[in-house]
Length: 267
Image 1 (cartoon, rainbow, N blue to C red):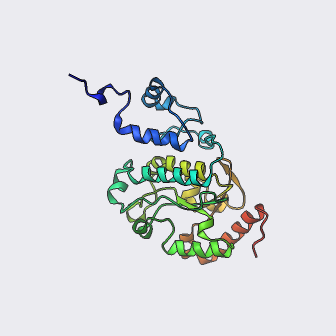
Image 2 (cartoon, helix red, strand yellow):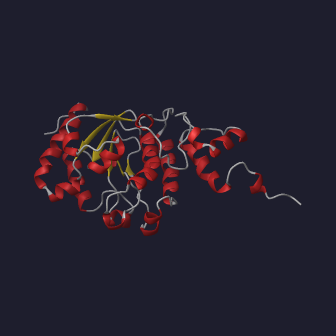
Image 3 (tube, rainbow, N blue to C red):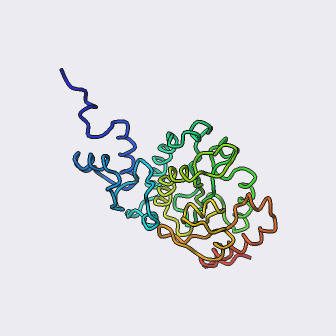
């Protein structure tokens, strides 16, 4: 009798699709031999080469230096970036790493904007409006963000926008550390594909999780940080501005600082 094919495979067939898609996202054009595949899947913690694909499971032991190490990839065309973002979005859509979030979400909220964007905006997590529409920053805070973008003489379509989490936390609570870690692979994947020159962290949750800092936004403002080859600026979240309108002046100063670095003067 012929043996069960799945029993002879070196890896769980249920993991094969995600694992293969990870290689595609990293720019692979062919797969290594079966023995190498088996070693990679059996001992993911032994993989330290930054040229290998994004792992199919979250890593909880990454150091800050590892998080700041972008995956080396050749230049991609717009079509290639769009295809890889679509593959990643499909993986996000079926993600169930965070049981509570997976059970309570309407849908995942991946990201929108130009895959070739020079600027990436990173927020906290989807709210009720985002969970319903499947797009980040579409509620009241998003409407304010749109006005800020317009004041910068830009459109949403010229920026890439995403969040630390791709699922809405119940009651809009802050993301738990484990949830942010589970979702970190997807955030890093978006950064690695888009390759923005500048990243704006909107709010303390975004800044804390991207940069690995506990400093409040008030102390992080007014200077650039570095992540994956991009200059990172931290400022107040639009939802904070809705509660504290005087802080809009601070955000405008932060954005003028950003655009000055880009060689653009905002009036």
